[in-house]
Every structure is written in structure tokens, then in C-alpha cells.
Image (cartoon, rainbow, N blue to C red; front, side, top):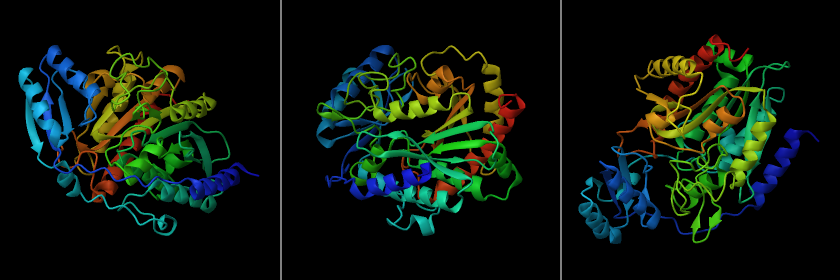
Length: 426
């Protein structure tokens, strides 16, 4: 039995048997959205302690560096305590929403009706995991000599981390690896990844056809399937995996990779959204996906990770301000890529090395690929909206899926061209 057929039968069985608990959907009625700024290390320590001490405050930003905005969603009963704490520490803050649920409801994400993905899959709406997987299975049937279903690993709840390999040549070509959705609530990332898949298969543009014909692509739209399902069934703002840790659930899968794990920019508290896990690769998702990537060692020359939000393009490292030895080449690729991303809609990206451009963050997939797998070009995109967005944030309107994905593809075309010019695919 072929690998495609094995994965198909296994996937269909899984979709038929995996049940989703009918837990009550988490709502944020009358929750307040505050933005705070720590102006010194003492104030930063107060916010860090707060992040790890309560589950009544949801931190939308990591608490890592002095001077950076930290947005917090605060339960109504916790507001007086928070304001007292901020006042005592003289931490400046700003109320941005009196009702976070109402703010979220104003964003039209538009999720497709289940079961129609294979006939009507488009990028004017978001899709649940099962429909995206069914669509990928259909692609393998439609393009049997081009698309191969691949399994990057498993999840805690037994789901497959399903991907596709796209190869339009019988000969071995340089490889590009793209993963998305490692943070569950960042819905635009998997949507953009599926758009890239579709364009590689159907685009008539010479620049995109060259991407498809000259490289082997390994694309995983959902690197955290359990978490993504949970954002649809229970809590739209869920970020982590779903592994139980005492009274809390999940580790941050992009702080769990075994490269300078938990050195900086992560939490040791299981209730924190940046919990690094009890050990490197404690999560079956990162462990199994890393093993798959390692099996491709020598075949991958460019690694791309899709996240949201803030409109950044980032490269190693996250654990230190020290720069990669080929940083000058990273800068050239960066410049070409962010120039291209702005051409269609004038969307402005910024970025640089992770540690300095956003914040310290050890244990990320991009750093691991670069630091342990000899992938000399590794980038992370933080997609739309911009970091100044208050109302949308992780909930990007469905109407922006296509433009966000189009400009991303423009950027990737330029990125691949520059990486090739610099000789990394040779």
C-alpha cells in the first residue's frame, strides 16, 4: 500500500473516531483589555510574576523586555486587583476595550460550513482542521504525481500532523520547508499556508511556476492541530498544545524545541502562555515533527515558519543578541523580502534578528532548524495585522486572507530568488 493510501485510510479513520468534548465555549464578556508598559526591570518583574500567578489574566504579548507593550485581557473580578498592583508599581497602562468579547465579535472571521471544503475550498473564509485535511487528501488524488501526503508527526490527542510534499520533477531538487499554525490562535498562518499550496499547483505566473518546478516543497499548515481544534470548539484565544500539566494545559510549542531551550523568553509555569514545557521536546508535536525534519537533513535549504501578528520578518537567533555567522546574507534576503511584500498593497513589514527585533525567545523552530539541521536560511513571518492593531490582532477578518496571502507569496518569491542568488540552493 502506498504512503498516500496509508495516510488517507488512517486520516479518515481518525476523523471518524476522534471526538471533541462538548465543553462550554469560553467567552470574554465584560473582560477588559489593557495595555501596560514596563519602564524598568522592577516593573517588568511585577508583570512577569503576574503572568505566572493567575489564570484570570490572559497575556496577549510576552513579558520579556523593558519598554515593550504588553496587552492583557482581564476577568471582571480581577480588574480591581490588577489596577491596584499596577498603581503600586507605578506601571503605566491604558484601557483599550471595556468588553473584549464584543471587540472580538466585531471581527468577521467567517468560518466555512463543515464538509464543503473539497468542492468549494477558497480563501474568503477560514476552515476547521478536518476540512483542511480533507482538502489536502483531495489534492493528492488530483495531482497524484506531484502531491504526496506526508505525516510530520502526531499530537497528544492522537491527531496527525498532516502535510504535503509538492514535487513537479522526478529528479531531486533543493528543498523548502514551510510550517504554520504552531500557535493555535493565529488562524491566518494556516490559511496562508494553504494558499501557498494552491498557488504552487495552479498559478500561471512564471515566477510562481518557477518556485513549483525548481524546488521540492514540504508544507505543514497545522503544526499544532489539537490547539487549532480547541480554538474552534472552546477558546478562540488558545495558543498552546493541549497536554495536561496539573490543573493547567499545554506548553508553548514554539518555546519547546531543543536548541537553547528555556534559556530566555519563556516561562516555567504551566499556566503561562509561554510555558516552555517540563523539558525540551516534551510535546509530542514538536518531538515528532523535529524527527521528521531531521529525516530530511541535507534536503532542506530554506525553512519558513508562519505566525501572526505584527508584520515582521525575523531570522535567528531568539536566545541571544549574537548574530548568525552569515548575518550579512540574512540581511540581503530580508531586504529583498520586505521590499517585495509591500509592492502589492503597500503593507509595511519590519524585523531583523528575533532577539532584538521583537523580544528574547529561546526554543523556537526557526532557531532549531538553523542551529541543529544545517539549514542556513531560516525565517519567521509574523503576518497581518500590524503591531498597532487593537481591534483585530489574532482575529484577522476573513476578507484579508487573500491580500495577506498574496503579499506573502510575493515576498517568498523574492526570498527564494535572493537565497538562490547567494548560492544556498547549490
